[in-house]
Length: 114
Image 1 (tube, one colour):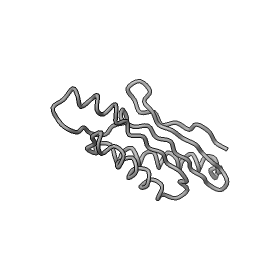
Image 2 (cartoon, one colour):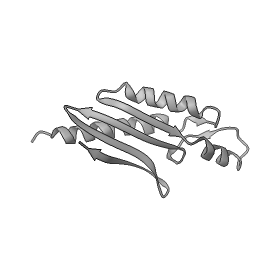
Image 3 (cartoon, rainbow, N blue to C red):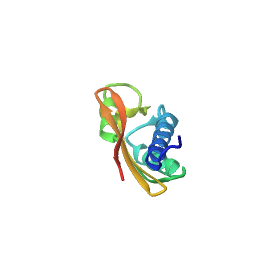
Image 4 (tube, helix red, strand yellow):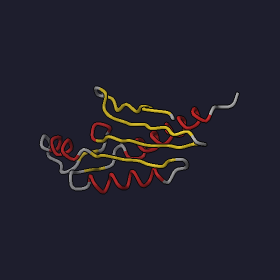
């Protein structure tokens, strides 16, 4: 059985989220570098096929608060410190996805399939 266009579009979204998260998790980040990291992450993922839009919000205020409790000037990027929205289009199917913390886990979800 062949995958439907919607299933393929959702699969493509998952691949892009996996790439985004696992490529950038662990990157050293500070409040001063948050904006440039957001841009780098979004532009890297937008290079992939079928990806039409990526918005990355590296939570500089959350990073600053975490840094106030430690001696280093930076920390490692994790899902706790970012929110992401992504749009993938495949053969006329548009999938809108997002990632945010759900408890202590960075939950990636399909928000809509059109």
